[in-house]
Length: 495
Image 1: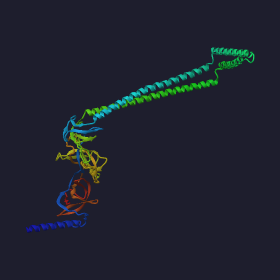
Image 2 (image 1 turned 60 degrees about the vertical axis):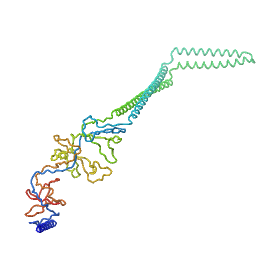
Image 3 (image 1 turned 180 degrees about the vertical axis):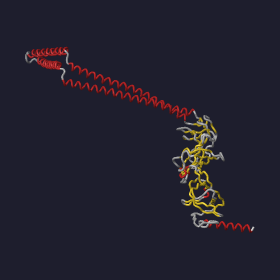
Image 4 (image 1 turned 120 degrees about the horizontal axis):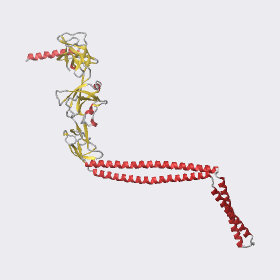
């Protein structure tokens, strides 16, 4: 026992000396050291080692993610009114297209239907009233056009009469009228002369004289009027009268055109108003029929074949379907497990090395020991904080991590089986560079200090620190560009 204890103490002393030698930068390598090697970081061998090998090196990135369905459909309670979920398919159950996914019940749909029916009746009444008003307005507009046409015809007839002048019959009638007025004037003059010849002082004679004088003046005025009419007939047409008549014709024609334009515009406006009223009737009727269908169909069929998934639940969020009323809520979702893709998450540094079309392999938990071939089909344009990927976390309590991640879609080859459980987690390994023939060693063999890479190479019985140049790296292996040859033994460093 004592020897064993002394031997353990000796081994511990030897390891302590080894650590001190590493801390001094390996100024003297273990066994056979070299004074010209100055390593800026302490390197401790773990006791394990590997031999550098020359092989094809393909840099890769390992990205965590999960399987998501690319064919998904939401089953909602209903639109615009409250519904109570009476029955819903169990979560995880498999439904074929057309099978009932849920049964909902609405307690106020009948009042909504009655209200829509009243709106349809009201719209119809308004349409009939608009149609009746259109007919009355059309009669008024047509009447205005006819009045304008009559006025134009009268003005044109008057102008035409002025241009043609008086006819012989009209002149002869005017002459006869003048002769009659002259005879009346002579008769009143003779009667007045006889009365004035009566003796003075007779009261009746004086009253008669005054009456005859009045009739004489009237006859004289009518005589002058007949003379003027005859003179006017003989002088027609007169230029001022023609100008006035022509102006009257132009005004009447413009009035007629304005009346026609107003009638056409009013007709179009009435037609538009009537069309709008009829469209309102159609809209009201469609709305009523939709509500009638909603009240008649309370079963929500599955739009696609797939697995039933209930919506996520969190404090302050949606209620569990079937417990209480929902307002335009998603009560279930159907996902098709045969149409799936692997959606991974990449950091800002990793996404810079990704591109569409890069080959990839996917390993999921439901297929242990098997990798599925695929390729990168899409890389997210925007990122989100890693805390937002928590599915059931309360949004108001999420604390940002400062780590931005992007969605990376890896599309699996069609020949691969795709019937995965929705949300199954796994890892995607993406090849991010062309294969390179280089000396490869595990990542655990090197240590990086600023821009320099260091490792321990076997030299005799000890280890010698050496600086190398790295060509490529991935999460597991390093491709050495210079400083290390194939076949050299390299120590795996202790953490």
